[in-house]
Image (tube, helix red, strand yellow):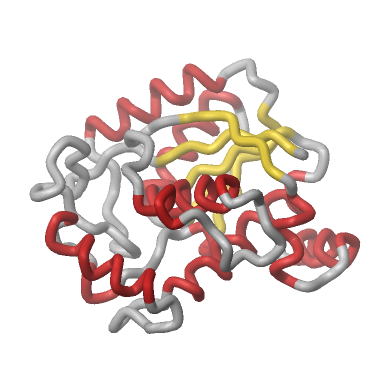
Length: 216
């Protein structure tokens, strides 16, 4: 088992953690942090100083990237960016209120191979995200890892853990996935089994590490 720090990016102008009618689906829209979000990131950075983090790997979208940069500056590490750690690409649902979008998102969860128009299917999201998590552990090696990512990827990790971390990554606890996530800027310690993550790629540990080194 391995322990790592999981950080949700700070708030943006599309976030409203207390009102789903005002909260907006962000998806792959590259919205930056707002001032509140930068303050979230600074507070998170303070909490992570002195924790021995050796590598930060973050989604390449602006809100996660900037959060990771603020944390990285505080602890003296330049973040590594990964497109695989982006949230679910919800295509045409992006920008809609969370209240309006949730019933439609649930439909795509029930039909996991159905592609969200201009986005991706639930199964494609899961496969990409789990591969990105496995890549992160390969890059980290023996260093203590911090991952900076998004609401639905945080939910996916916890839904998989709740299901027992199966090698079959299609088996997750959907009630956990659909539950309200951690607040923007939240940092927490997560424990999981990296070898079970790697099985999604169907490659040996040595091959995975060699590929991670090639990809930087």
